[in-house]
Length: 169
Image 1: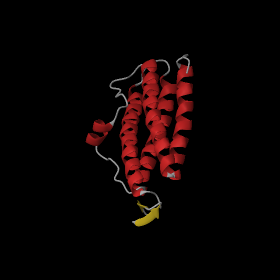
Image 2 (image 1 turned 90 degrees about the vertical axis):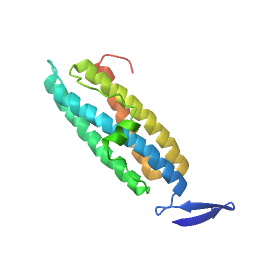
Image 3 (image 1 turned 60 degrees about the vertical axis):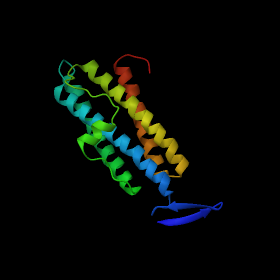
Image 4 (image 1 turned 30 degrees about the horizontal axis):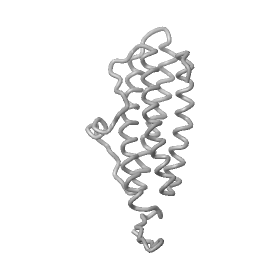
């Protein structure tokens, strides 16, 4: 750990040159995002397995695409937490204790599944925007870029899901 004096105030920097204090706070925020993403991922697996009806083939493939993407993001979030010096959550107990994404149990109808995705993404976007602001304040371009990319992709997914539901954004 490096100590830097700025304006007579000592700031401890971590090994990647960011404020250790701000990195710790970002790690906690990212752990919240991780818990919520894990719940979202499990929701997607559940609706992928349980979807029924005339749109099965299209939705089954779409849900697989979404859960594959979510799995990649879960790994990226955990690795960013480690990069910042934190320890990522890794138990279901941690995920359920810290997640706010709605849990979709036994969702098998197409509209219910799509609404679950929209509701989950809405919650993820709220968390990601808070992290985006905090990472900008910390000068953490790595986390900032990740959040920006996630937000852009998820906003488009919400738009597409709302179009599928024939609802306004």
